[in-house]
Amino acid sequence: MDEFELYRFNHHDGSSKDWAIRDNRNGTFTTRWGKTGPRLTGEKTRRMTVPDEVLGLKSAKLGKGYAFIGTVFMDSAGNLQGQHPTKQAGIAQKLPIKPKSGNRYGAVYWDVKIDGQLVSQARQALGRQILTIAGQIKSVGSFKLPPGWDGWAKLAGFADEKGPTGMNAPDGLSGQVRKRHGIVPLLFLMALRDAKLEGVNIGLAGDDGLELFDLKSEDFVFDLFGTSLNAVRPLAEALGLIQPKIDLSTMAGDDFFF
Image (tube, rainbow, N blue to C red; front, side, top):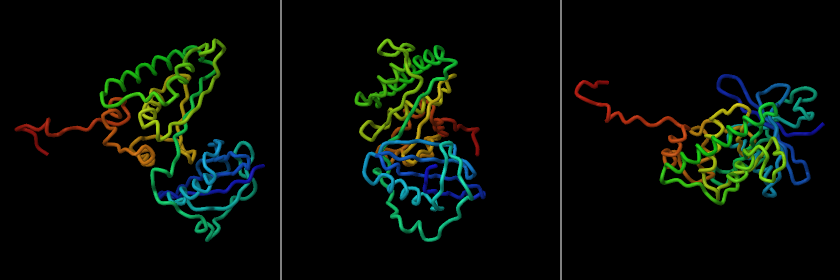
């Protein structure tokens, strides 16, 4: 049984979601998350990149509107043990709330898994889609594939059914996209995920362990990479991540009225 600190975010419609964190005291930390209930299904364990990373993540949650609920115990499947805790007044104020900045998040974490029942077809489809998206990126002249991000080579080898060494390839792969890599690899991964290839499961999450979904709603992404939605709009539109803007002036005519 492991001890976690539990935080809760209450939505306007009365529903809520929980996030919990544990310092494993071995240079790693574990986060769990999900809808408020007897079990938190999401889970990720990562190595710390800075000494106060756990404190920074808790502060970030408070800055987003989460409230500290209390200390809980969970089993390896994320099942909460005993009674659900109630909010402990005043504890949240003991943690400093950091201002929003590009340093608030260190990276975006990604992983790719292949369904064991569809290994050959899934890897072939993944390889074709990687080439397709890479071509789409190159077609938008102001954006380039950054050579410093090793994800390209890792994914290419992963898509090869036998793997780069001639051995049977593993069924999973993971990595990070950091500020120095720029936002292009993240857009590439989002487009790869949105292709919804059969037998291929792709996950993308921030430091808080929560999954990234809609690019337009993830403000921290633009803070992390020091850019904006408007700056990456041409590429995001080309990859189908956002809808193209409609220029009404080109549609207007003598018979065009609002």
